[in-house]
Length: 388
Image (cartoon, rainbow, N blue to C red; front, side, top):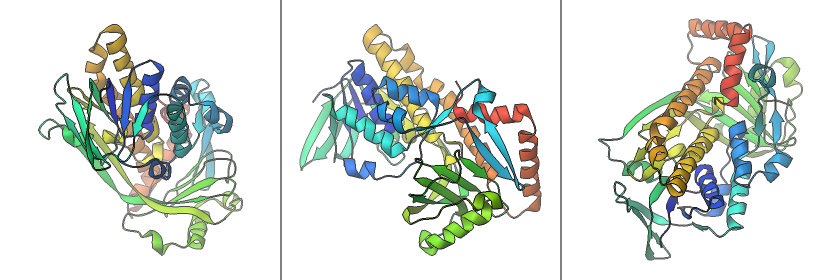
């Protein structure tokens, strides 16, 4: 087989890139190691910046998002038994975010791709990338016991942290920066109405708490736990009690409990790979960077990579210029590191970092300063809705 762009991985970055390319008439094939059901079974958050929602509409996959997505004009911060609202519209000139689950977004992108003529190969095993430093790279994989080869002009590595794309860049060229946090998020997904119309961030002496939602009838709640905590040690009753304990009384009274659709513990880490390109190979999404979910940046960074990479391919094929592709890595990394900083900062601000009383007093003082200052609230708001 031959194509112009071989895309490794059918997560949001790969699917969005593929659909943008398809709409522009640029041939592409997506090669995925897992099956469709496995991908759609992964539970992920979904707070979309306006740039991401615009991209989904551009890709022809925004119709259901526009009908079912929840547009949020701010969020609430709870600390020291008080609440402060971060008003996005007021502080950023009218910008908002949209709550729409990553699983739903992925399904929409799959549906529009399947309605077209472009190919997605599932169950591709032993995927390998070859000759990525040349103008004639190719991909090999096995399926149904047979070896296959895809010749292409470029390879987009959208196959996540554990994929084959990033390790293809030689270790002497690849620099990786990582920080693992000493805690995780114990989360529960339940078909119960959200405790608030907007997302709630809570700073408590026993640890961080987050109240979010997938829809008006499905809620996602998290509490901070030690990194060595086991999910099997938590009953649903214990979780709901801990959630209420960390919320102010007036909010805890509004919590509606219900059976868990899913309970899990997610570790938190920050990770960046430099460079994000090597010859004809370009990394996008989790293959290049991971952020703790505190700042709601992971999915949006992946969408930003897809946008930037699509623009580079468009310039190459329509205007015979590789200048945009050559600048892909430094331009993406500038945006990535800003999002990494914000996500690290939000994580450090709201979580219980240690048992040192001094640390907690500093966190409280910073929260007081930020919420008591228009400039401080603007800093939070403009980073949360997405830096241009």
